[in-house]
Image (cartoon, rainbow, N blue to C red; front, side, top):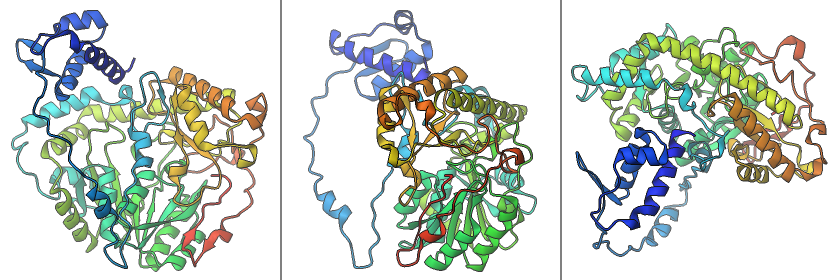
Length: 538
C-alpha cells in the first residue's frame, strides 16, 4: 500500500476511536499503534501529526499523544455572501473576467481515494523520486554558511549559472531568474508579456495549468493546432495575423499531452514567425529531464539559438525530482528580463534560500547523474508496459503517437458517433478503481474528439499499470455500449506499433502513414479570433 494511503487509513481509524478517550486521555503509544495496525513508525508519526493539525490531539514530547480538550470558544460562522457581489463586479465597461478555474489542474494534483490506481498523476511516483539524495542534499544545505540568510532576489548566482549552462552556452547567470517551480515561472511570464484582455496563442491541446494561469491573468487563450511534428507554422502565422497576439506559449520537447517533438525544420521557422509578428515565444521546457533511454539525441532548447531575445525559457527541477522541490528558472535576454524580475519580486520576493541551496547540492552530487539515468530507464520500461497493456486490453483506443519522453500517453476514444461520452468514461473508470485524466481541460476551444490522458510515471510499476488498464477496460465496457461486446474490434488506426516510440527525430520511417485529411485551415476565424483544433491525429 502506498504510504499516503496508509496514513489516511490510520488517521480515519484513530479519528473514529477518539471518543473512547476522555479529554486529556492518553492514546496508545507509537509502538502499540505500529504493532496493532501493522504500519511503519513513520506512518504513525504522520497520522498523529495530522490529528494534531486538526486539533483533535495534542502531543507532549516524551509523554505521548493525548485527546485534545473540546473547543468551547468557536465563534459563529460569519456572513461571506457579500463576496459574491464583489468578486463578480465588472468594475467598468472594459473589465476583464476574473474567474479562476483550477479544475483542470486539480485533476492531476488531487490524490485519488485509497485503492484507486493513479493513472492521472502529474509527478513521478515516490519510487522514482530521489528521496535519499534529496534528504542528503537538504541536510548539507542546512549546514551551508548563510543557508537561512536572505538570498539575492534573482536567485543564488551558482544556481542561476547551472541553469544557464543547461539551456545553452550563449546564456549566462545574468540571463536567469530562479523561480518557485515551473508553474510560477509560467504565470510570471504571462503577466509580464501580455496585458489583461490580450490574446495569447497556445498549442492545442496543451497543458491545463498554463491555460488556467493565462485566464487568471485576464488573457484570452487562442488555440493553434499541433500534429506529430509539433505546432503547425502556417497556422501559427495565420493566428498571429488574425489576433494581433504578442505571445505564443509552446512545449517544443515532449509536448503535454501529445508527447510531440517540434520537428527540426519547424524550430527556426516558429521563432522567425514570432519575431516577424513582434511577439515573444514562451518555451516551456518541462520534460527535458524526463527523456527515455531509447530517445536518441535531444534538440537544444529554442532559447539556445535565439540571439534576438524572442524566446523566454521556462524550466524546472520539480518534475524529475519531487513535487515539493519547487525550484525552476526563467531565462531571457533584453529589457524583458527586467519586467520579469519586477513581477517576481512583487509576487514572492524570492525563492527560499534553503531550497536553492538544496537544489545546488543535489545537481552537484554524484547521485544526480545516477538518478537521471535511472528515471530515463524506468520511464521507458513503464511506457512499454502501458502500451503493451493497451494493445492487449484496449486496442480500440487510438494511440496516434508513442513519445520517447515525458510520463504519459494521449489516447483517442471512439468518435461521438459511437456514443462516446468522455466524462462518462472518466467517471466509470473511477468507479472501477482507476483515475484517468479527461481530455477536455487540455483544450481552450471545443475538442475535435473525446480523448483521455494516461500517466505511467505516477504509478508503482508495470504490475500496477497492467491492473490499471484492466480496470479501464472494465469501465469502457460499461460505458461504450455502442461498440458491441468486444472492445477489441473497434477499428481505430494508430500511427506505428504500440511498442515503437517516436523520439525527437519523429516517427520512424518504417511506421509513417499517410497524413489524415486536413480540416484545420478552415477553422481559422478572424471575427471570433479562434483557431480551432481540428487535426485528426490528435
